[in-house]
Length: 578
Image (cartoon, rainbow, N blue to C red; front, side):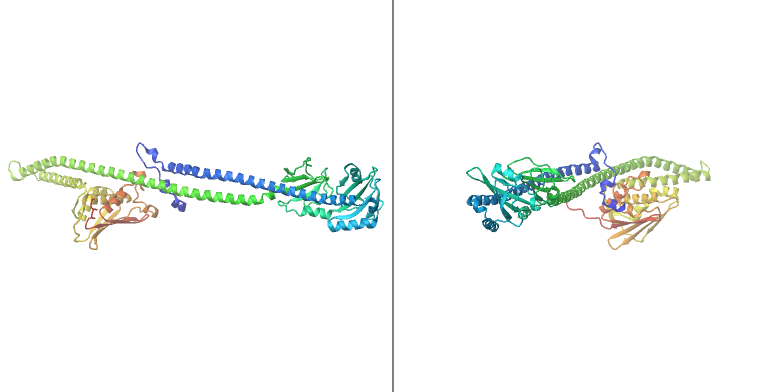
């Protein structure tokens, strides 16, 4: 807790002390809070607003870029697959038109054509020549498919309508996944024949794997019913239905967002492959796609947090410094005002004391004169017989009058020295004058006072009134700190050739180290509950330095306090007026 208090500004540790009709203007805690709040709003609000706008704009830009990139990949993949199929369809079309049916019926010729196709294009597995009844009358390839009847096959029914057919991937008689490209050639008599080729899906599938897909991307083909036609990386096996909605037909590549079975956001790009039963599907996980955005977002948030922290620290530091400076200036203003008030009170007391002394001196002079005359009558004349008892009483009256005269002279001396004047003074005499005002309290509380003055103390140039205030404040504080039966020791000695050292030691309650460092601060007092204002030692400190001296205080809690005051023999030189 003590360490935390060290970091608190002075205005936060002290209560509001400003007085006057505009007291509310000096609520420094409220000023500090208002300054911090307004400055924070003015600086942080635009920063947070700009960061938020940039955050949303960057996120949307990255999402849009991912969608466009996926769309471009889908369009490129659509063109590649379409080119792959149309290229092989064109090759078969050329062969069926360039060769007569009699040539295609010859195994050697058909085998030669297959070899040429394999050398020119990847993926051709076999060739078959089929008549209009759907019988395969000539076949070359690795399977024993001669004489197979395809009249009931869907692709054969389709080819009679369109003149060509690109089939879905299926197992067929081979029992391995493959697709069929078939071309019809119509004869003048209305009959036709078909050249049919099986395409290996290995090369077909490799086309889809060659695309670079981010975000755990998966590219595959489905048919119009959503049945998977090519292997997938993260989805259902071959010939199973995809768990997503099959898109409506469109000539363009489309993209949309959905959720998968796990509830994760995904991006689906779809494109219908022309003249084929295939639909290209590209699926990407949005969370994976936004991984780069998460890294950017983290950097953005870190930047924002660091910026806000630095700005807040700067605002707190600057506001604290400014308000604390205002507080110290206000404290100095209050100290000056109270000092003036204190000085005015002392001056008023001095004037009052002078007036009282003058008023008392007149009747005292009359009493002294009359009492002396009565004594002379009793002593020197025979009119009244001499009475020892009456003479003793008259001596007592004259002694009391003399004592009152000394008191009034002391009051007059105190009043005359309220104004600041430099004159020759004797420090021991001033201390005795101050103790003369306090001896009744010392007697009442049984406080013993010991004065130790070094012999041959020199007279020196100083301000008598300020010296009286200094020693009156310190000795009065010492009396307040001591209980009944206390002891006060005052020593004055010469220190070097140019100064005197006066030490005032009491055996009072003492002070803690924390309080010892604050005793000269304005308004600090350990006697606030008993009426202390906290100005006495602050004014004393200022008076000592005005005289060119210094003061050092040492104290132990429960043991007592010592004030060591150094006073120069020559007053400090005032700066010349410009």
